[in-house]
Image 1 (cartoon, rainbow, N blue to C red):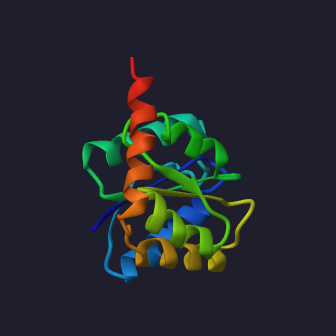
Image 2: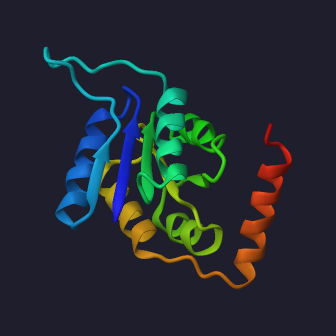
Length: 154
């Protein structure tokens, strides 16, 4: 499974730690940045650009799922959700992470580096990536979300 990782400058260290964690679990991880420059300084970037870039990677099939991080996880997820086909959910605890996969067929999980610590973030990823979409009654609702998205496409 290919997992894309993207963050703004508030979450570089957490992104790098979570990528290493997921690689150790056998996932193929693609880094969409941001990172450190050659002088060891964090490269500043705007979370909407990273949300869009990683959202497009998910929507195009370049990656199967993605992990997005910013200060709260909110801004970067809002940006990713503007990309057709993306269902990004901000989760700050494991229960919601599992249910967003099972019930909403989320394809991006977002977290806030200023909200969750690295160990909690790892538990959230374990639940998200350990769950599967249940379909059934939930498929109708996911289809309804897609209908709303299609209604407002330009």
